[in-house]
Length: 222
Image (tube, rainbow, N blue to C red; front, side):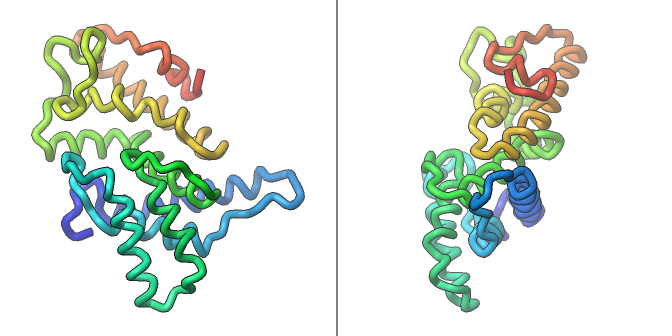
């Protein structure tokens, strides 16, 4: 954690834990079916706290391995403090599956909740701030000078921060695993769209969102 970039520090972890608890509570409150399994907090909470305990830079060739490395490290840490070993496989899976780049399918409710909780960090005001913070730290331009909102080219989010909205951020609501996560994500994605629309006004360039994102303009999926 000490070597993490500013967007992946302790405050990020604390917010992911908060997001995970928020989603878990919403799932419990919305459940109307007898016998519906509740989230195992003895799996979810340590997984949330440890999900980024190994940091791999975003531009590293090993980025997709970060969650697996974090899962291994989490088991070592939890073993050292005497945490019940019976929970380790579920904790490790939740950590491994949370990562966008790892593309590991979620096999448990706890993994779904943690994945949603982490992805919410890329949306809304926090997501906007983290995107620009990370882009700045990597020396990226804010936007492409000739095509700010990539319409005639493929997004290059390794070069322009605004391109990251189109390459990844605005796609996140459709990837959410839980109903609670989808609701929160669509609201926060609407904030990102509002930012892009305001940016378009200020730089004097019209914006036409791709059809897959147009439903986000009102904070809801189409």
